Length: 494
Image (cartoon, helix red, strand yellow):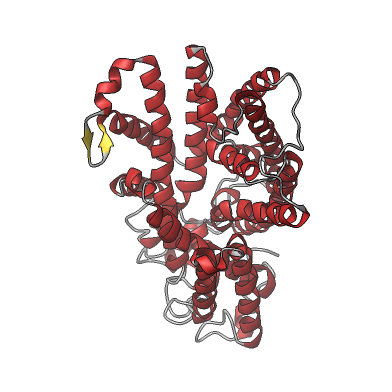
């Protein structure tokens, strides 16, 4: 069903729940390739290469790393199809989707958790990309070195210039709206393949055209290797868990559910496995050629003797970093902050606020502080599993995919998602203990052996608990409305 904007505005005359950006998508232009490009932008980056190379340096051989990637992407593919289906069917962004299970005001909890994580990582990713620009500029113009020895608030003058440059470029993309994001991803996603394939061929040739895929720097026995494979698989899923929550921010613009599934298929298991295979090949080649596994592709580029090739390669990696930052860390907080005050904050204004906050947190200091990265951001990240478990269980198991979209914008006690003063106490009763367990498993050293599995444990525990509570209590029936009247409402999904 498509909801008329004027009718939705009438449900929320105060402007506390509705603006044009939070309304169900009016135009749905995204096709299979657009979702494929989103995943290329998400996968084709320095972080993914480092993740794959890191599994190799931990003792897995090339075949075992590839098996781990295939298992992880298979799980991720199924999860993203679920998350994508919710957005494609309802047409609403993540913070509005969260109103279904958490209530019209309670939805701000998952939205703000997601926003804080995204804003911090947005700043960190921008800082890391700016360091690549610094290296590039010093290679081209060594005289700039003098600006590296003068600093302000913990960052050199040259670092500030490069950071603000990338910060501004990303802001230009996001403030032009979701259509600009789509067009940027369409060409930014594939561009890194050029660099990766050229580097892979160069290293392959230097290695004598032979790559021993069974090579391992620290051979593991059968049991340790098997555990390493599954640990890597679930760490991969946890890395992209943020997208599971807000993938509906993108799929709400899909022409059909088939476009989402096809884009996910080519973008996640197929493309990710191909990128991982190239990354594995390059990592093993560095062992053969240089005698040590190089886990940072920027360091590989730095070994290229030709400055022109170095410049092109570095620029493409910078574009790739911008791409992953826009997809994973910028779109979501723009919608999440708009949800807090729709009357005053639009998607574009939310994006500007997110960018300013990402600057104010001084991400270079965050990144250099392991306590902040591991405990603050890691602890918040552990909350994502329970949040997704509750939302998925409510949508698919409790409601069977039938949602009255109009009620998501009704700002009074007669609304279906008003629950108790705008908050669903059942969702909070499940979220608090399951999030605590997930955080303990992820952060307490005594549980290090199961830490990589904290995300799936949080998802399953919260989903089962929420479904059990919902089956035994009335869910979604507002005060003053009978269950028959609720079921007679106009659903968005038939």
